[in-house]
Image (cartoon, rainbow, N blue to C red; front, side, top):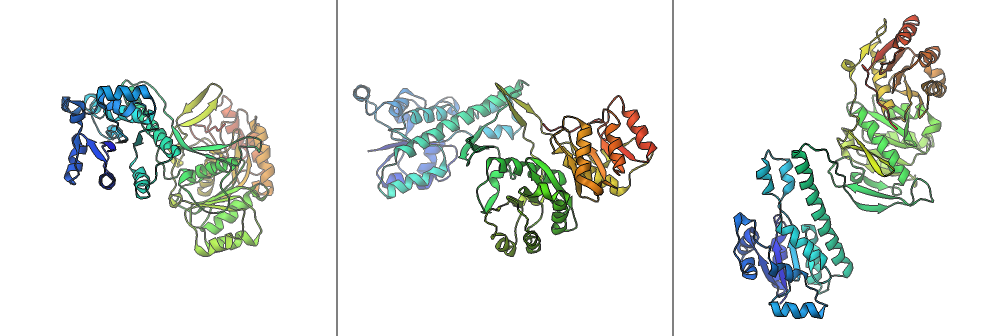
Length: 513
């Protein structure tokens, strides 16, 4: 008779699995609450204490920890010496372990003392899982209720699970123990007020290539839940995302989070930098204004929307024979999808949460040789109350709105950056420059005649008045920068001389490297 040891905190699917095992002549071994659960469904159960020779003790801290159970899981059935020793010791094999752990993650959600929290630390479960996973060739280990159906199917088909499936279940067991121990590690360091970082990624997916065709590329997903994780976007047409597509899509997400969901907004990203962005009365208007920001750069980029993709929007896109690689949107009208499906190279990704986007609170990581830089995410998104007017002239209401929009766009541009906005539309951007003057020149060049009457935001302070002077000569009427330079007075005097409104973020900058 085959034997299964069952010790679970999460009892989802256990009744059905237990019935399958009983129907196929298996003996069920269990302890504590698991035994009571199985007995409540009239399953015959062998108590673990019958195997261990000892009763449960110390408030349940000791149940399955024993030489007899560990040996039944660990001995190698292919090793004659192990077989002989098992016979001499009276050890009968356990062929299946069904196990999951006390819910230690709940400790982070409850206001518990340290002593109360340690009672959520599972010792026996993780020991059993590791033992069974080590001997996976002979012992099947199930730590995820979602996997029960696969085993039940093998019973129904009277097929042995493959070596690959056994290895997969064993890997999942070791992943669970690693994750579980990491949570405990984090909790204890938190109690000691010691800083520790934890990053865990899983389910690696191979990409066509990396940033360049000669590089291999893979995407790994964080285990932490996030409604706006790119993993949670539904692809309804087009090719899978490439390495660079993911980078640009992330920049699109960040931009839309900054703009929020109050008004229809559209953003366009190329090579990780915004090249178009606008707010409109409709999503069609926002799209047209965003594309007009820089049509040359927008070609082949990625576009994000915070409103449903309409048939009207799709018609305008197709009429002008525009080409982009990816659309991200909350929803799409059926007619719009029919129209856009003609673009075989266009990938469309949908996520309803994009209609009210929000920044992720997760830590920001940057890889360096031999380590990783970790910082809090830059969640500074100024309102009018966060700004200080330092010039004689106050900005108009429209200028104030444009300055805030320019700041939000510039926040996602590579430093140094200067962004020009006019009537809720980006008209020019100079990004990724080593000096701020060159960033000003690029932004002005991109904008052309549209620079007249526009507003400018700088992601860092102006060290000299030369940059603002270029902007003013091009027709910029209002400027926003962090402030804090020892030459701020010169910049203020320049703006006053030309009746230009000047505001600061009271020293807060938003560099992006």
